[in-house]
Length: 265
Image (cartoon, rainbow, N blue to C red):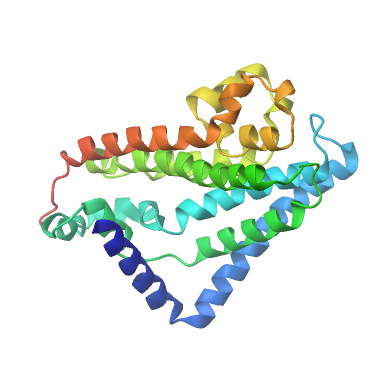
């Protein structure tokens, strides 16, 4: 029942925002341009060094597309996590608590952001473009694994953002941590971790599990598991990690929700 409500309410929120067509188009174009600049900077680096840790330009572009698609997939329906501090401080979260159903679903369907749509469209377009340029023997299995990798990567990033956002119920401000996580994912998630130090690879795999979003499943699809810093079995299981992390993040969210105190406004 709540899933149906989420779907209907999200569509309604997106339609409401899309009424401002000029703003919608500008937001999407701005997002595409921003991601294009990021990809171009990688192209400049690879034009100089030819490969990065043994990864060619099409392979790094494939990695970039995986990360961007996963990012867009989580942030489009869950964009309200990005403004949860304001919602909590202004007391608007009270309304979600008195309505029947899950407060998180009510929060997510409160409004919809347009800019992330550009991230999702850009990621899907780039992924479709580079699929024919990378040395992957595409088959029903690899295509299914690709889809699972994108969904699992989206769940991994969502899990981290959900867990951190829940701190707003205690501190009234989680923006610094959320922005830090987003910056790390957007900066380091576009490159093969092989180019970083062993300490950085460990941190970006087991402390902040960025590697599970794109690098590990990308290495599986590109048949580069022999060069990984983790067992190949863990890399193959990367899509499932997102589900585990999201379950843990939701438990944290539910526990922190108990500490919410209305501002009385």
